[in-house]
Length: 226
Figure 1 (cartoon, rainbow, N blue to C red):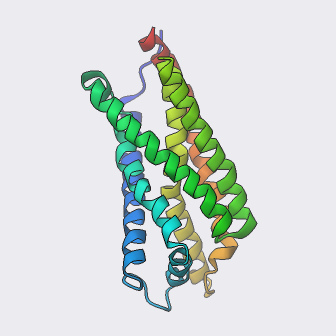
Figure 2 (figure 1 turned 90 degrees about the vertical axis):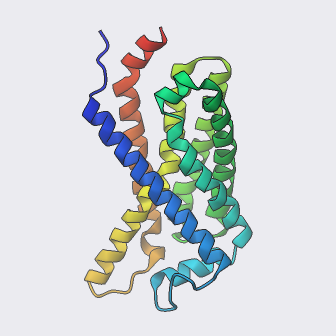
């Protein structure tokens, strides 16, 4: 008999998802504010000032990424709320379409950014290209399966896609950790040296977490679908 996922695990997962979504939303909001008001949130001596200048040099592409990224962070968690899916299927379909469109824009713009304005060089470009392509494939598979009304497989590919997109929020504290280690050693942080590694760590952790959750909940979801 399929085992119902533990309540405390579900609560812990939801807490983590909402927390990361808020981090992602805050990061996108900050980037938008800085683009429209250069120098507002960072002084010239801050390591973030150099990063802000790099994004400002590609303002249109950055906005094409962060603005739909806000929608991605807000709508993403709603796609997995069972009460909305069961009680308000029309709302789930409409928000799902908006989420899919925003995700496609986020994914395509991320690939463009990884080749035009990579901070961590080839290492970062490799990570963002690999996982960016996988993100778009996951979205396509999720759409394909929902059109076929194969909802278990649709759910699995949506989890994979959202996990990859949400990883950009986890990458923020990882980058902060690299900054902290450099400052603790009395060194000037150089984002070019560790941005690529931070992206690999963040994306890989989220991919592992997504597959672990899919495998953990698969028996219950298959029984529910049946």
